[in-house]
Image (cartoon, rainbow, N blue to C red; front, side, top):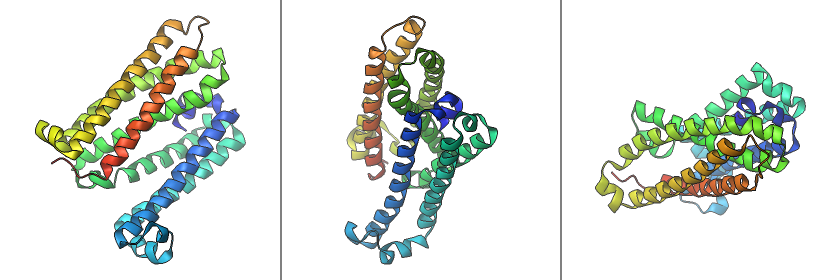
Length: 268
């Protein structure tokens, strides 16, 4: 939604963008609801097959953790309202202040509730800010990649490419710089030393994540080079499509490693 609101309002009227946003919402809602149930089963020591029963989920709903997850699920429900309005009105909705405020409120709420679980719970105030900023810029960068790959590039509309690509390139640069700073702060807080980075399970997994992130940066640099050098001429977009595809695949890998880190004890 941020991509549509900030970079490509006209995209809200295209079928590709609507399908992508709908699929993204479905994954987010289903993942949040299922996550609550499976976490409840894990806490209760019950098998995954019983995760969706009231006897397992009910006790967790009365805890702070449960209320947080319920809030996240409800935010996804509100997000559906925002998406329905976008699907109904298209580009005019994406340009309206009311829709943007609604999308912003839902998006920030989902990010904040995600940052209130896992290792982030025990971080001090500045750590909470770093987690939120980290999640925000990751969403902008990787979410933008998905829209580029699945909605913008397949259209092969040079007018759209000329308008959208330079804007996203600037957003990606700011996101990467901010992500690097926030990630460094969080890594130091959770690992604490070079020795822990090299000799703990958490540290080694973090190194794998950093390696994939570095390759992502190289792919992103290739995309930016294409935009800077060839956007003004009728260049073939296949090279850019390959670069964005590689960057997106690596992004999925990084997210997978990050999810595994959540289940691993910090290196401290």
